[in-house]
Length: 324
Length: 278
Image 1 (cartoon, rainbow over the protein chains, first blue to last red):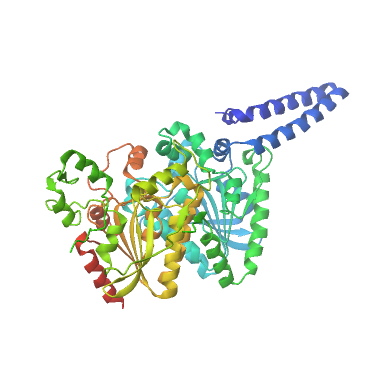
Image 2 (image 1 turned 90 degrees about the vertical axis):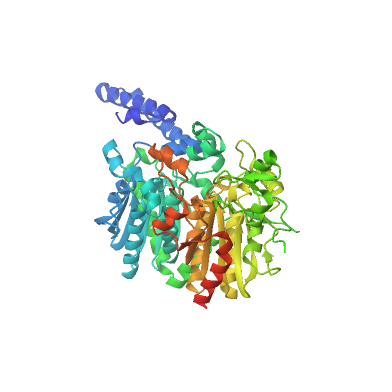
């Protein structure tokens, strides 16, 4: 499948504009026709406008499609553009090495950090190898082992989240998927080093939260963060997985909603049209946020940072206390 | 002595059977016909096969605590509808219906009480209220109880039963996992004891948070305890699941539980554990 075929229906008008601009450009180059330059610049203005409108007006389901876009940069497509000297570490020391989640030493503009990220894979064989970014218990045990390692050398931890969820399977249940997620949440809550989490694609339920308890939590503009996949919610509450678009809207899974509900600390804007339109620019925006954010949280002393982290999650929730 | 004097209802599944059989009821485990009273007197555990039928939250107060020692907390806290969630039915209406059906304000009861004279904190979930699902109220009540227990130096007992996070509160429900685990972690770090009692069924976000973050984990016999429910797994891997998969005894065999304890021995067991730590 060519890249053009991987575009979503609602992206087609933009593709048409781009094609038209390119045609005019080559015509102008060959003929040197003055009037074409005017038309080109008009179309370019139109294109920017169309991209801006597209990203502003997207429904929750369209953002879900962007978050899962075949051309969207994965966590490590971004990481390799941001970090230097990436060195992967493997294994949970008791069962295996989980390829759905990568843990690496990395250098962020001169500062050593421990980097975690889900890997979904792009081609079919890669996707199978990485289990579509759905980690087993050994993946989270590897994370727990290595964030403790980072803690003992006082290195910050940065996690890039992009997973449909923790894997639901026989082996995962046998090896304590629920137990290890609770353990990971607890360890992240108490980790004595600065921590940052960014949902860069799909933030799928417990599998995302297990590496998502941090001093600062951000989402890329078109990322989603959800308690259950739209399909899962639709099949339970709407009695048909095909009604996922309605479930996505009802659960309010977009970055803007997460921000307004107090669940995340901020949104990192994507390039016009979405992250897949420009990987380098997306990485640059993410990198800037990571650097400034890390600087900010590193200024706090450990006790203050831990207290603030606890308070942040402690406050999340909306309820009512009746008079009687 | 009548332990169940104040109970006005039973689990829905038993009630259905009753409609057909009058004074008799069919065990959900072995399908033996049992006199209703006999089942009730045996704490809803089948006298033939030992099947533990689900019981409503308030019965646990009588099962575990010294008589008249329970003092309930946060009784006025209720769920609102932060997402204005509508599926086949608006969440607001589901909440009203659940309040009427379960005669409770939400899916967890929390408070202080005594076990064999020892002052403890206890939270009990109620499956009858929207499948015991965890939204903002469940998360907040458990976090508050746990923080109070830490402050007042009380051990913590959690009786869990839950379908998981409450989808109608979206991402807020997921975050209750972090909130409750954080509170329990501080409780443990204060040198206090926390014990989870997992009952049928305990799944999803509840299992993956406070219900397994405690010092010790006990389960009732035959309870379904899982991260992903059996249906989700079957749909994912497209094969039948092994017999006994995700039941208490299976989990005990896989090293995930400290013990499996029968309902009529639960109080005694808690007392034994408290003796070890104090």
